[in-house]
Length: 163
Image (tube, rainbow, N blue to C red; front, side, top):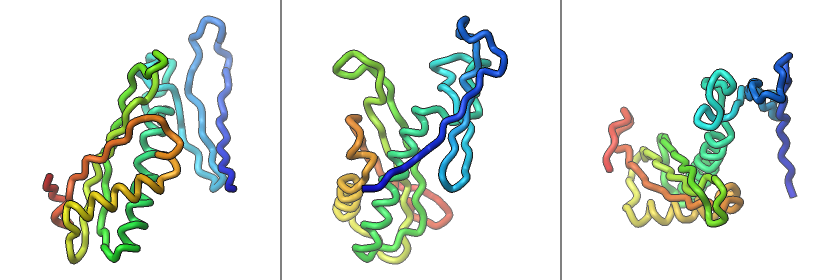
């Protein structure tokens, strides 16, 4: 068993608080020393009470799902003998009401643009790589949200994309 930690730090900084006009800005601190500015989403709490430039929990959830899928895709591809040159994902999360009527991230769409060096795996092989990555991803296994992969194949090192 592994344990993962994060420290979430927020301070009132003189706001009245009970009027709900306090900053939602806070910090996420991780074990490697990285600190990330965080806040509620500006779509949930309007600025200036949210910090537009900060990462919100919804974005972080989408990034975590995307990052986990990518890391497993790279591992599965390497084990299969494929060489990945670049992987860029423009992931998106959709917030809607779930079956219980609660707001939730109900769908995450991953849109990785992947450039391979040398031989290019077939569409079927790439689909199998994505399926294997999804099956191994700890974050995907932890979520009830639908996760969809819509691959965009990068055909040139310069980043030109083909669908």
